[in-house]
Image (tube, rainbow, N blue to C red; front, side):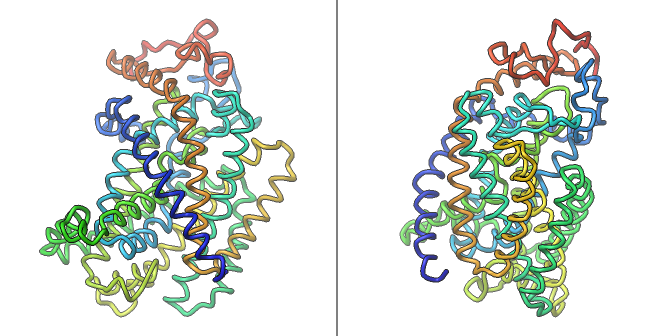
Length: 488
């Protein structure tokens, strides 16, 4: 591992810095322009939809069994947030500050604000092109909209393989690695003990399927996220006099003269964007797999809800971690990853280890929910590649194996592998969004028009007539008695 690690790190840096980052910035800016800043102007609508009452399946798919066992919009949102909110928010932010300085946080904010538009588009497309799963629910994601919308199964299979490797193997290795480090730092639990227990627990949960994962996520994720934010706010309030200086430090490190002369501004930008993308996953093609499972009357509804997840992840939780570290005064040269976050929260509370214990517990729940949600992303794509069940069984066992290996690996090589596979997967998805984005833009115009007229937006496949024949999960105007005249 030590011999090959430098080559893996170099490959990851090259792909991310010279391909992914420029393309991601371009696509984020383009989609922000094409959607007229949907992530800003429709923020209130995002919040309204998140808490809206779940509609009856028949109100969306009259005369059809589709959607009767599908997830609610909130459940699908929580599955994707379970994947977002993990080690990227705790260990990843610490790594970003260590490698790129405080200025990396600024660029994490920037990429989140811009890439939320890409998240909206990819999740709307996932809804438009979703397919029935044979159990009264839905399945979808980039592999499905690439295959059905572009007509290239080879391209779709390439994406399916990359996301299965990225989330089931690389990202889950990162999650288990962080859990084992946190437990060892707090309680001295040997990594081998932690990883064995984690592997067994993972296999138990993922064998229950998407509904088991959704039920687990919709309870655990909100509780732990709220608890973590409360703890962060307490530390911020305790150091409120230093908060303005903290903001100044972040901005100066992102644009300061010293950073320009020293060349670290480029490092801050690159690290901030890479860690931000790892954390919120906007544009890389992961969240659409969860978004497609939701039962909604219009694709844009779930697109808006999922875009809100980017804000929840990066603007809220990642920022909390950043302030905990920067306000603590702990040196970033003495620790890395989750260990730095633990030391920072201990310094913030000055409680002699209680803060680190809380972080260890938070890490466990955040990272474990990420593991089970990441697994589902892989499973839905394995099912796309082949409908034969034994491949799913093999994949489940392989994921369990990678959870174990990740807990026993070094931090550097785990992050580097995740960077490479994530970058390749994101590139696949970005090119698909360029080709198919027009369908999401048209759906957004349709939704905005209906809302402006005071109607409850309902999507008909004829809204995008050229793909009407391959989007049969949605009702047809000619074959439906459903009306959009109904007030919402």
